[in-house]
Image (cartoon, helix red, strand yellow):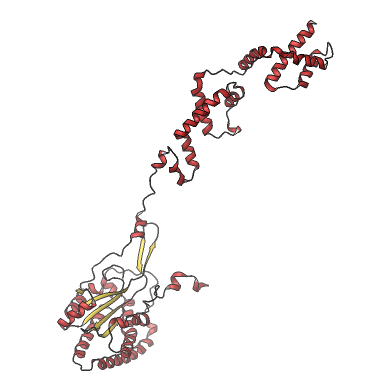
Length: 204
Length: 224
């Protein structure tokens, strides 16, 4: 949906060489109600946006789903980072320092967000319907999740890249999905095996 | 003397009737003779022996008695040309349950008083045997109904089993379950390079950074 947005697509096409890849098939749940009604949903999954140099070195990662404005804002900041990195003689040291400072700033913002956690919108208990994509973008739950990605998970990404140094995407993909996005790519059940295979286990 | 002669004749006559149907023992004949002759004289064992020994006209007496019995039982001897109706009856009996309770009274009467039963049975059995070898639809249909489903087609002459329609085609829902594919969709309005390597090559030429979007599933499918 994000890449169908004209503004987002235009910004990406003008400023990036874009590509996408699948890290694994997505688990899909199909419920056949037996009366001709079938509901199909994805069960678990997550996304990540890498911004890399031309040699494939990872500059930064945007973990998870972002709102359109947050996504454009983050991509704009990474464009500036790209320009700064190209001017550096010690690119690796610059990137480590960048990620260390960014992690510290976000951890400070995380503490501020934690104090207002009680004001967080509760998860919906009934199905939510949207008449348009604009309504979905402005959905408060989605925006809060995007903010959590920008703060909590982004801070973890910075910590990860500060310790690893310059890396290629394939070198940190599994760690990113397992430790930050909570989708272990090596687990055939993506961590859902206790729920899928034995739903009554927790009730015993 | 005349009375004895009459008694002997009556005894022979009665013995023939009884023995013809049920092979009455000698004691029955003795009682019958005593009942008839008691008012006149005591019947000795020798007289009984004389009656049985003098039964030379048995064959001559049986014929009229048989005709009397056949007339009373309303039995009409079937001519040789009446084989077809008998064959039809026999076939019907063979294909139906033959427990005594289910037999019709007319069938009991025919079998009890049918003097030519053996005569009829042999050709009927032969005809039935030949009929079964060629495959009687009625008989084989009954046999097929008692066989397991998988054996029906092996029965000879069972054309209905060979032309049995195949199992019903899977429903639309079953087709969806078996052949369901993630519906393809357009991957947004972004111009995507085919791979990360190609995007890096393009970035070296353009000076732009590379944007790599990772996901579970395929971006060009509906459910990702």
